[in-house]
Image (cartoon, rainbow, N blue to C red; front, side):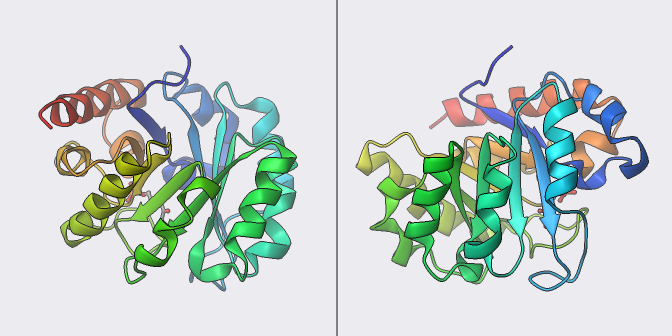
Length: 225
Ligand SMILES: O=C(CO)[C@H](O)[C@H](O)COP(=O)(O)O
């Protein structure tokens, strides 16, 4: 189907970790699969590392959107780009030189993403927009699926969307955490175009049907603005 302008990226954090190849087959109509890498240091949870991401890359029917919730991103993120991941997003709080790291990721061949925890301001990064292909505004504290969407992140999302629009650059604006049929509309209204959803895809009925419904809800809200 290819990647659309309203992108739905299911998070496999909520999938069955014992059957991930099967789970990937259940979301083949999504745009990308969001792969949460957690190191139990940057966040108080642990998932998997580059060996697993490399294997997921081999069996996934759709490209990988890797979200690194790990310390020392400067050291570790390039290895994830080397798996062939479509995009690699590292946290601003975990990188000592975000520009050098983003350039390295692009040089390897991945899109470069930067993620911000809820308490991190976007402003220092707005002057660096050309360095990034994607900005992830976290709408929960990173670490766990199933948390409530933080509506108070919408002003930050709006400021980011306005800056991206003013730049004329094709930078994807992603939200992650608590995205559901109830919350995707307000995120789209505030300028998000790339939506990560774990529970709302895997824990509510058939994943493929949820992807269609989420995409429709996002698109109809985005068109109102
Ligand atoms: O990055 C994450 C947590 O840090 C997950 O991608 C996110 O929380 C998805 O889960 P849900 O849609 O259930 O909130």
